[in-house]
Length: 116
Image (cartoon, rainbow, N blue to C red; front, top):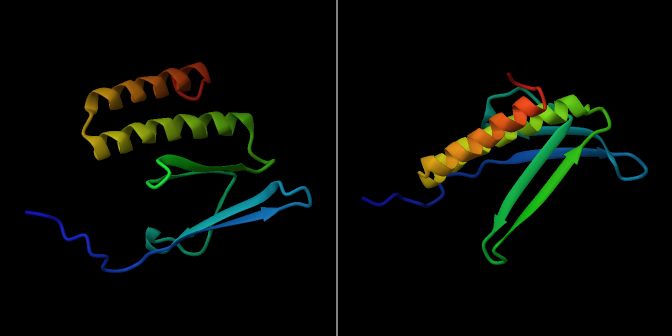
């Protein structure tokens, strides 16, 4: 049985970036229609990756405000790496490689002292 890939509706995720005179992010906020949240959610850091099938490459946007501390960035990276393992396993069913990514995330988290 094949899945129907016809779009039933469109949902948007909006990202707002406030820049200072030097074009550095000083404010980040996001809103997703289907997230069930009221209004915008503020953020101090954002990583966005998109796969371009025509170019066969990844486009990335990495932003953080001056308020983001090194300790917060360490924890942000730990959680992002751990989340990537979950996403990788769900999308590829490659549990072995996902476990290797999880182990790297744990090693990173322990070394940066964000987990025990």
